[in-house]
Length: 59
Image (cartoon, rainbow, N blue to C red; front, top):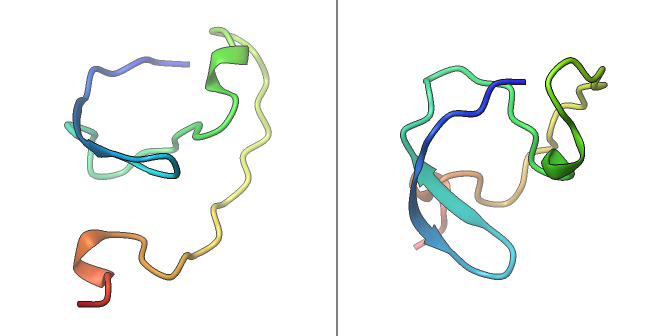
């Protein structure tokens, strides 16, 4: 596990938008506070949502 500093761009009760991540990354989005360096983690791909990025959001 590697922690990387990011800048919080926007957040609400369901989402957080950050800047400063590498272009390609595997990210723990739920339960990251329960793992430490060296823990085995089973990666599960995220399912597509209605709007996964601001450019894909409906006007």
